[in-house]
Amino acid sequence: MTTEPRFLGLRLSIMMFLQWAMFGTWVPLLGRFLLAPAEKGGLGFAQWQIGWIFGLSGTLGALLAPFLGGQIADRYVSTERLMACLLLAGGAIQWVTAYQTSYAAWLGLMICSGILFAPTGALSNSLAFAHMTDPSQQFPRVRVWGTIGWIVPAWAFPMIWLQTGLRLQWKPPFLVGQEFADVTHRLIDSFHAAAILAVIYAIYCLTLPNTPPRRGAHERLAFRKAFGLVRWRSFAVLIAVSLPIAAIHNIYFMQTGPLLSSLGLRDADIMPAMSIGQIAEIAMMAIVGLLLKRLGFRRVLAIGASAYALRFAIFGTTSLPLGLIVASQALHGVCFACFYAAAFIYVDRLAEADFRHSAQTTFGILLGVGPVIGGWLNGRLAAAFTPPGGKLDYSAFWYTVACIGLLAAVVLATFFRDEARKAKPA
Image (cartoon, rainbow, N blue to C red):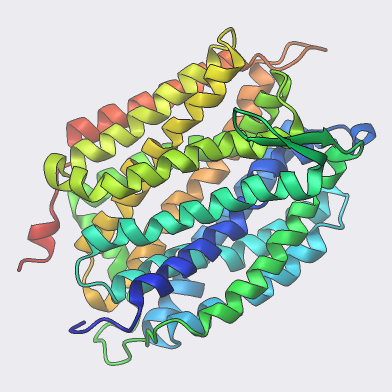
């Protein structure tokens, strides 16, 4: 585009804040709530049930995203209006889900909300890219507000809703108090808060810069052109690596809360502890554009995958002090900025303008197929490393996950080559 809409950076930053605050409110706590026994306020689901709830909702949403999101935004409806509709419907379903207690109800409703919410992540990215003149420099500065959006509820929700009698202390989370007696049961209220945020975000979408569809494009099926990117070796390698990375990324959200709880961390401190990763993500997002210029996509992506391996290796060393394991959450910032953000930027460079939305949502398929693999893998590993009548051996569990991250890093470093200039010559 030749000119940028007024106050573009501010408007897109608020969009990213709301996009990820909506998820940051509940994702870190859901695994803990669903796994906790009913007598302690949870639902007492099994590990395999948690895996399918996380996995199927993410994967089916991602599989339909190019058709429900990318195709419609590229050809029929403006992106901001489509996002508003998806968010309103998804927020309503999420509100109803919070009142369910059966596995079947949770699975079905989470799949429905996943199908509606999944396209919004890729559409928010593509909307931002559509109005930027220098995405590699501008996108990290805008996307960092999504990280801040994840952090704010991670600190605010436990302080406001899970504790009483707050007092200052020198170490994070700085404000602590006495947990309510029903603290574990109160975790589900994060779902109510997220549903309200979804409605607020839907209304805000109607104020975003108009991003109309490209009705005059030669290819009516935009997602067909997007899938054609697989002819480029770099995109094929990125696909092959994204599947296992997305799987272990999903396991992180399923099992980190239960891990920290098993090591003695209070329920009210789980979200602030996990938000250390998002705080580090802010710093990494600020420099990822510079890293891409200095090191190139291959090295930056490999660094991101290696960070997954290192973080999970630390998780597996459960003999380490709890403070060190909590501090290792900072590696999440490297994981996200160097792999996820860099990958989205690369896909935008590789795709042509008339199927940019579908390219982002098509790549989102891969990040969404990963969760169902992660859900299946979580159940298998948990079964393999839990002795009869005993507790999960977190060391063996996390070391195995770390090996998957290390293998992904090796594949990237060996086979990935930047082909964006060949795909879109100046």
